[in-house]
Amino acid sequence: MRLLFVVRALFRVWRAWRSDQVWLKVLSDECQNLGGVYVKFLQHLASTELMAQVYAASGYRLDAFDDVAVEPIDVAEVLRQELGVKASQIVVEEDQPFATGSFAQVYHCRVADRPGSRYIIKILRPSVVRYLNFDFVALRFCCWAGQFMLKNDIFPLVEIADEFIKTTKRETDYQRELITAQAIREYFAKRTDNVVVPETLADYSTRLILVQDYIEGLPLTEVVEQAQAGNDTYQFVKDQLGSDMQQQLVTVGSEFLIAILQADIIMADPHPGNIYLLRDNKVALIDFGLAVAAPRHRASFYHMIVQYRALYEDRADMGLLALAMLAFYDHTLYQALDVIAKDRSLTRTIYEYANTLLQSTTSTFAANRQITQLFLNEINAGNRFAVRLDSVDIMLQRGLYHYLAAARLACGDEYRRTHYWRIVHDALELAEVHANIYGISEAVRSSPMSIELAQEIVMDWMSKVAERDRAAYAMLLQKGELS
Image (cartoon, rainbow, N blue to C red; front, side, top):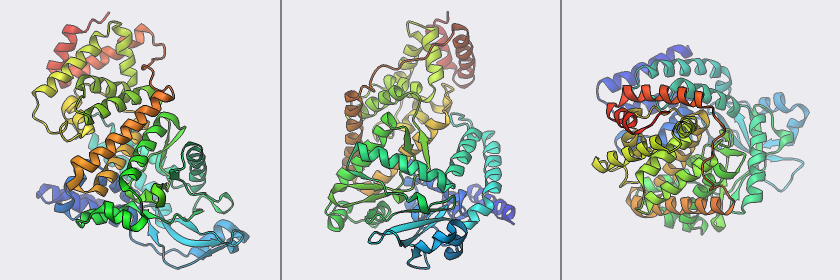
């Protein structure tokens, strides 16, 4: 039966696309109808620039973030099966959840041996447990088939699917999330008072349930709804909390970037449903099922931050931006280029070619500070430089998408070039200052690589560039000295 539902959903999306309907609206509806993994996919899609541009036309619903349809759950029976005699310690305050997500439903509760405090219990949806393995197979097949249709292979779909499957398995195992949540809570407790992470009660958490502090604040989804209704969200937050939303969104962004530069584990899912605004200009982060280990090349990420900030200050060097993104997204290739050409002739050629491309384009990506789109659609259009992202970089990029979308939507389109740009600029500036203070800003360093391996990597790369962009290949062949 599940197979029939998936096939029917795919057919409806294909039919909408073929008939020039707003197929993203159909995709949104079908993903929410299927639930689970498909809603999680929809959340990722909803955080992209593309999705923000079609909100009004498609009637897209923000309930993909934190108000998914309720599924019947016998909470008392789940507690009995998971906690045994300790189940009597948990008193659920209502039959219906106060929040729903793609994988879980959340209920208010009290803990008998901790009187005076408020808690929530997150319960994994039975349908997720029942269909998860099938949905993984279906998702991987779709990505395998879709890879043949994509001209741009910077995103290896099957590898992305495999990584998504691994992270989803972690996200649906609350014993793992318990460990992640405790690590992130400990990190922020030492790092700043401005970010609150709820305590997770290990004694009452299992693979299927999670008990945490109740966060009393304003979910960012409510702020986004106010923005879409045309209301002044800054005044709304001030009235509700007495807080400055501008400062709060800068905190979320800067701390996300600083965590990438410093933390061992990074929360990779900062979408509006996982961000709460609090009093005293503080923010809270919830839901740590989607997290990644630190990137291998923090200094490379630092150089990306520097160029991102320069773009927001109208002093960007697009050649350096291209090289910074290359060094972070495909560090093995960057290292091989450095070994092959000690005078950096090949990297210098990429620098010159990127500048030439952007000087001749009429694209508005740079003017609108759409950095990822600038790289994908202009600098590396068609993946002319044959870049392949690894799974950690993909997850971090997705997390950055989520944060940027959250900030943009909370401000509203009217304030894109003022409030939103200032938020992103200030977050980048704080992260850059932190990196300089703590010594993360050193030059990108490479581990030793033999000349033979470097030659093999570069020659294979050059052949792929030749297939994609003859002009780029000719410049590399002419100016690059392969020795």
